[in-house]
Amino acid sequence: MARPEGSTAASKESNFNRVGPGYFRTMGTALIAGRDFDDRDTLGSPKVAIVNEAFVKRFYGAGNPLGRTYRVDGPAGKPDPMYQIVGIVRNTKYYELREDFVPISFLPMAQDDDPGAGATYVLRTSAPLGDAFHGVKSVVAEVHPGIVIEFHVLTAQLRESLLRDRLMATLAGSFGFLAAVLATLGLYGVIAYMVARRRNEIGVRIALGAGRARVIRLVLREAALLLVAGLAIGTGLALWAGQAASAMLFGLKAYDPATLAGAIALLAMVALIASYGPARRASRLEPMQALREE
Image 1 (cartoon, one colour):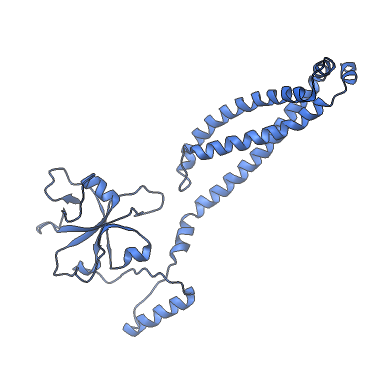
Image 2 (cartoon, one colour):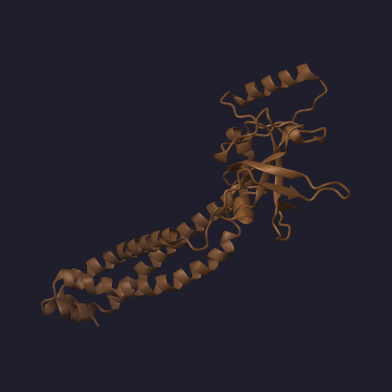
């Protein structure tokens, strides 16, 4: 539990992580203000911390936290440790990609008085993975041959964590494409049937001097009415379904105006293309032939 020094508010939760110098540069996390950890941060020096934007927003609001201190609830019978903020970094995820940004306080590894037996190191390299793994094992073996090392590729871990999301996105895209094809065929069939039922009316209009462009506009107007009704219902259902989908797919917003506008424009274009064929055939009807049909 972290508590800003001098604050009378109740304790507020914060997450903690211990890192070494160069960690943020290796991970590509931008340092907004202040400094990174360095050789000045030792067990005998004052305890320092680097915090993220969410930490600053929760504890300090719009104020500048650099140089200010906060305390952490310590073990029973021991004084609460105090940390001075020396840097601010961009927000990053703590547990998983799907979570919101949470307050994080980064503490230097060099000031950990009980580091434990294990450690995790982050290595950024442009060398082939096999060569990098072999080089690291060789260097560690020179220190002690009994040290056990496990390698994990961060990009592979990210892909694995998003495997379900990618599968759901692929399935959703496939079903969406199938739905678009079915909608195109359905609209084509409805407009073609409507034109067939109104052959006599269209023949009369042509006989009375209606041009081809006017007949095409007449048929497309009917298709536009169906399109507007379908889009109104479909948009409502999409917004409702988006609530459930947003919980299943990483980075998907339930209300994304750009996506909805793009989908509406695509469906409108498909509907007009599907309606143009029957409309064009209707404009080419021979008036006498259409008037003879019942």
